[in-house]
Length: 395
Image (cartoon, rainbow, N blue to C red; front, side, top):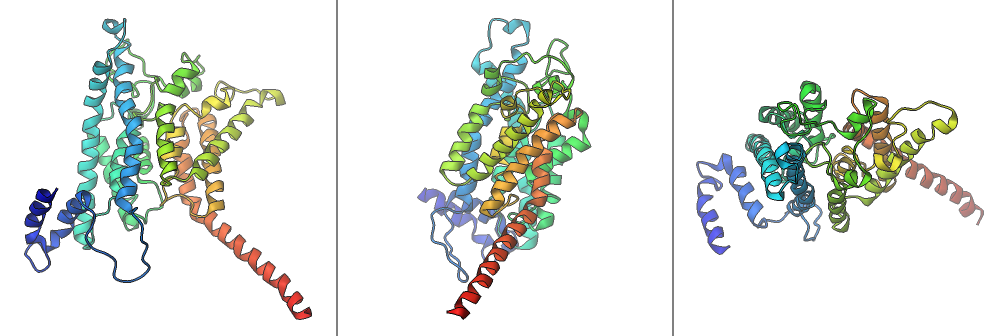
């Protein structure tokens, strides 16, 4: 490590203050702070002495994403290969993983190259250091995309997410919408044929007639019978976005976030409660004499483990920048995320997945929720003070 430290110090000499490349110092400083703890401290304002900084927080989220990413690479290959005649007797793990990795790794590379390029350009233009926030966003964007989406669409989605969803508001920590979901929303509304249907969720499904890629929610929305067991749904061996299918891997990531206190367990728990409540309401329709459909009759507990609901709740609804900040606000925010997500997926058969819209909608209302929670506390304290004053005067 000492050798690397010496080499970095040598490389950054032309970027030091007063040197000819001083303007581009944020670019080399970003590499330095990625490899080493920053060697500077704040000189004014409040000081927090803690071992946790933004870099460690982002790395923790990346580590929490790894189980879902690894499974997504394997499942991406498996969903295609197991439908081919030559793999009728089983799909070797390595064959499936390599096939999926060859599709997914280029998407990750494009996401980081384009996103970090824009981040570096804005850092140099504004004269501030590059923040580590894109470490997570750059990985999340490919993980929530269909496996066969063209790379140029990934690049355009990243450009929109970083420019409009993040930098337009001031950069890391200032955005009101989750950048990864902003990228997915852009791709969905700009290129709907590449983001929906029954041919985009399994590799090469559009090119090979024998390969089917319809998701469980798509099957239910079209009124067909689901051919997967509850265990298939929970394990993730089903078609879907790259890393959103395995509830087991998502649960492992949730445990990492909660135990390290990076993710809010209040948001996660309340969101699943909200989704369960909405699912139970739909399940109760027949008992109230109302006719349901395949989506409303789908068991409420299965709603929690199919589609992108679990992944969105754990990794995007908990985004500390765009989520509610107050304790009570987190409960309200999370509950409404889950409640609205299931409502949207059931009421909109043309778009049988609502977690993206549910989270983005609640991102917009999160400041309002916090405002009323704070205002409620203020009013309660004013009332308590008002009731206390007559007692003081009487005494």
